[in-house]
Image 1: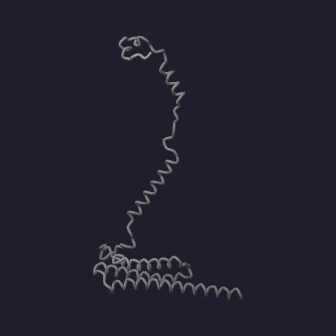
Image 2 (image 1 turned 30 degrees about the vertical axis):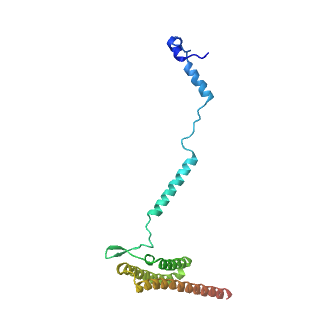
Image 3 (image 1 turned 90 degrees about the horizontal axis):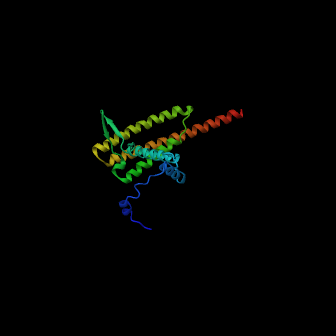
Length: 192
């Protein structure tokens, strides 16, 4: 029963036989019926959404990575020349904690304040003083950069931060007094 294919080709018995007409087409039709091709979309919605999430994540990461650190290395312009100034955090980790504490407290106090048209004048006066203190802080930071750390400069920087925080405490107290006096005035007017 088992025949050697080489023998069949040598005898050339197969070469005389012809394939029936449309044999190949019928074979492909039967193959398609047995194993139909399923067309899938090139991209599913999940793949597109995942790609968008990955791109957004990479973009945000690149933005955060390449964004300059504004607080730590704030450049100061001196005579049309930009100079990177040192901060207390550049001197020692302990001083960085002190500086971060005061800056966080200052920002927290500023965020708690409510600006209203009635308190505009009060706010403006304190903001002018805070801006002057900030300019002085930048000058002290420049001195720290140029002359190196000294006890006087470090103490002046810390005192500047303390003074700014105390100014904000006074502003908050005055705003509370203002609101209390307004509430009392309203009560008196309502009782009349």
